[in-house]
Image (cartoon, rainbow over all chains, first blue to last red; front, side, top):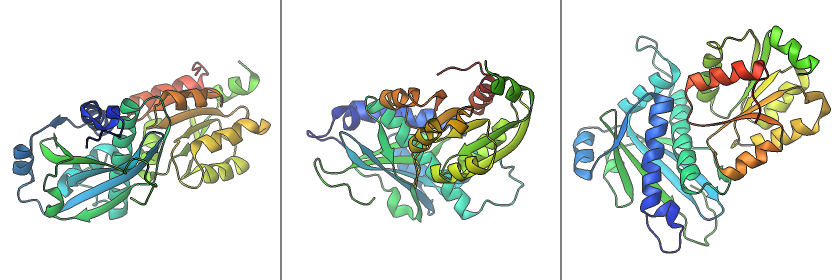
Length: 172
Length: 139
């Protein structure tokens, strides 16, 4: 996540701290959930046996950098966040997949926006429509740039993928 | 306080919610129900262009809009509203993830009454609607 050519407030340790803080604020205020950083070992433990994951990705374009923020979370956590945000009663019919995707897109949108507001507050930024896909456990293997957290004691990984400095803005 | 605002506070308030997330619109709509404000019609739009279509055909007292949306952004929408005399009385509130200083400065030039930064709690939306309906909020 670090680069000598990318702004350190966004992609250095300060940027990582801002990202963790952003996830915490989004979780608490919008989803009534509690997020805390967790190490890779704890994340792997929490992720064990989960084979259905969602990946919600959002492209950001800002004066100093462009890239993509990915949020990776298991299906049961997605359902929990959906109920918290929508006020859905557990006894209600299951939400449509499109509604869950919309909700997870909004989650990624808020995380990315809150991070950029903290890490690059001087400039406006543009967020493209989020993309949400169902994926499998291979996506949840922690990679170097991933920030791993526990959200309501469930695994959540956030990954920032900056475009190469000076590179063209491409598709997410 | 002008006549339009005085009368709006004493009659049902028509609201337009503009956000490309249907879930976010539903959350805002649900929250409006707990505000101590008589609600009239609540309209929804998925982007600025759809919002303008609603404004063309309906009377709207309060406009809640996101900024980053496809087709037409909230900033473009607010510029159009600000430039049109017939929508002068529409009270405008931004609900956006973009809390940057420059975006807030931009909003100040578009006669926006209040700038809410996501993530926000339902109570904040409730309080802002109550205040805006009473015309107590100034950006």
